[in-house]
Image 1 (cartoon, rainbow, N blue to C red):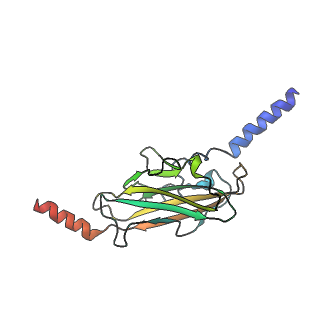
Image 2: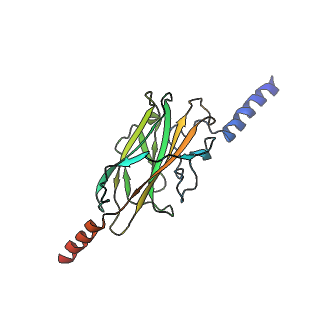
Image 3: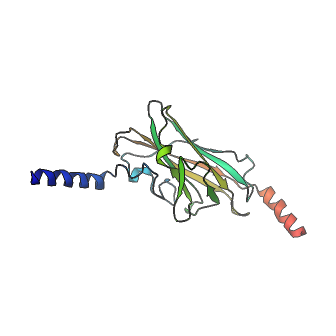
Length: 195
């Protein structure tokens, strides 16, 4: 009996090391967007290969670009009819992985900030269940200072098979490039000079 119990406990321990089953139910650890700076995506914990799928990150930022200091809404969404459990992580960065702007949680039931400076948004346990097969998360972003230039929102999305282990999940990567509204920045600079 002792040998059987020892074997079962050891198997569970090894399984947790190889397949960290519930580690991401309450949000992915920081640095899992698949950006050039992060390197890692959800595949560092979930089995499979990440595929790129454009259009999973959207915003209300006008085509003319962001205005420094303004607040905008960013939305991450993914659809997989027949699936009910999802996860995500998004971060605004430059190409080196430096965070740009400030993230603001607007739905504390379903999303939270992670990272040393709160520069990643991820799901909470409450924000993983979508019986319709359509998962959506939103948060706010305060645009960075004038002269920052382009900002890219990098995101990783997990479509789980809800089997409580990391195998069989599908990972999608997406990004959204936002330009700075340079005419607004020039106008702001001119007003500053006049004062």
